[in-house]
Image (cartoon, each protein chain N blue to C red):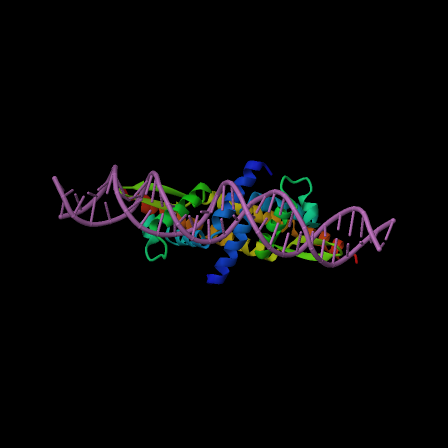
Length: 109
Length: 109
DNA sequence: ACAACGTGCAACAATTCAGTTGCACGTTGT
DNA sequence: ACAACGTGCAACTGAATTGTTGCACGTTGT
């Protein structure tokens, strides 16, 4: 795996590794596109905090934004999620062999 | 989604959201089971740093350990990876509808 | 023109994270 | 018994993260 790819992947996982951002992703998935002010409504934290989270998601290419008059709409970008999925698939496919090696190492008492 | 589950999921993603830990996971996947000292060999950072990373992975239930004489072997635990995969699958499956909603919102100039 | 609204920027405080070093403890093989 | 080795614990530093607040700027509708 190239070093850059590894970094990108880690960024995606790190971006998802926060309950607030995970909730944002699910919210955006459900609704489609929303402004930061809109997303912050009824939330415990401030709009600015939400904006920072959105920027983290955008830096990981999980989210994109588009200006629309005086507001800015944020929406999900799917390509990186597909990559992350592919990675976890690869891990899972290597799984049985890895488990086998583990047993032969540990059970040789 | 229950709040506890959401937290667990975020912990899994956060644990994977670091290039060092990602490399550890792939290394363990390839080899099966290794000690912290072994994993630290030839690495730029110290054994203690590796141990801390392994503890993060273990807290997220991605890794388990087992004592074996004077050394401690670490190996992957697959169940949580399967859960993370399922989550990304769910995201991806909701994707087309989300994209449709996005377009209708943005393109209505 | 102007009031209202959403955004953008910057400074700041508190917390968490990554990594180091030093040393003590338990296990192993001679 | 003892030297060697792998581990465990604790203290510490520096950097990154998360969140706050205050204010200025652009856009919108009346």
